[in-house]
Image (tube, rainbow, N blue to C red; front, side, top):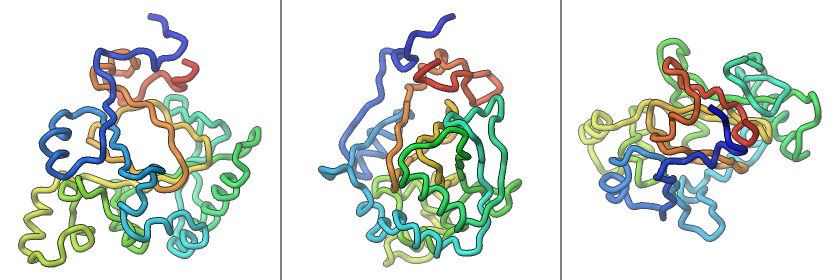
Length: 249
C-alpha cells in the first residue's frame, strides 16, 4: 500500500456532514442514531459559541482568571520539543508543574504566535481524581471553572451526571426527577485540554462518542467517517494510527 500526497483525500463515499445547530429533538432522533462524525455550525455570524455554553464562559480566555481558579493545583502535562506528538514512539515525557506556571507558559507562547526551534511545548489533558479507577470529570475536578459553562443544549440530557445535574437541569424539577435523568444519561467522562499553540495530537479514534467544544483559540480537526478506518493503518489492538502527520504521511 502507498499513501497519496495527502491522506485527507482518502474518503469513502460518505463525507463528514456540516449541519446547522440542532434542537435537542433533532439531535436525538436525526443525528445521534447515525453514530458518525458531524460538524454543528454555531448559530452566530462569527462562529463564537461561548455565550451558548454559559453566560460567563468567556472568562476562560483570561490568564488571570484561570490562574485564580487553579490556584495551588498541580498540572501533570506532556512535555515535548516537536509540534507533532507521537504516541507510538512516545516523543514526550510527563512533567508536573504548578498550574499557575503552566498557564503562564502557554499564554506566553500563544502571544508570540509561533513556536521556536527546540522550545519545550506542553499538552494537558485532565484525569480523574483517582487516576486508576475513575475517568476524568471536569465538573468534579474543577467546580469553580465549570460553574461558568454548560454543555450545548441539544446534548445536555445525555451528559448529565451527579456533579453537574444542578447546573444543567431545570431548577424546578425534583431531586427524584434529577436522579432519573442521571440514570438515563449516556455520560462517561469529560476532559479539559490545554496546550501550547500549533500542537498536533496523534491520529486516533475514540471508542466513546464525543462532543468537542473549543472555547479558547482555534483548533483544526481532521474527521473521517468510520468506514474509512481501513485507510488509517490502525493496529487491531490499538486506537492509534501509524499515520502521525496527515499533512505529510
